[in-house]
Image 1: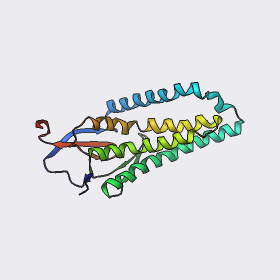
Image 2: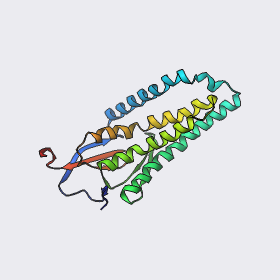
Image 3: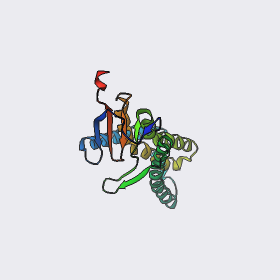
Length: 199
């Protein structure tokens, strides 16, 4: 048994909460609202520092190239995002992550059958947005003004695309330290000792 995770639910634990992104409309609405709010919070202030007109102040051929590169970058980012989840799952469990994709929902995900403790689970959930956020921020510091918004769009995608991760982190942070989490990618089960309220 790993100090961060275990294959079997510890004795005396019971289901405390269940979240299903693929079925819970209220959760999906919350995530969508957060994504839109985060996107606006990232875009509006930046417009005063980097006029968006600069993104179109270049030959049409270069604009098309930059747009294609932006879309390709977002597609590659999806794999990189889930890859980081997978690396940290491996780090904490010693086992390889599994990966999935729901075309109808547009959801890519990494998951494991292991039960994870609170802090390791938060680290796994937060790792992609933090790591790629830092890398993209460094890249944005040394990019031409004309190509800034094309790269910044990937940074926005990084933050808004992690809305589901951030939603779950917010939920887990408020749970007792004893919580164990099993995440199958689109749904999460949270377990606590049957007598945790008495502590």
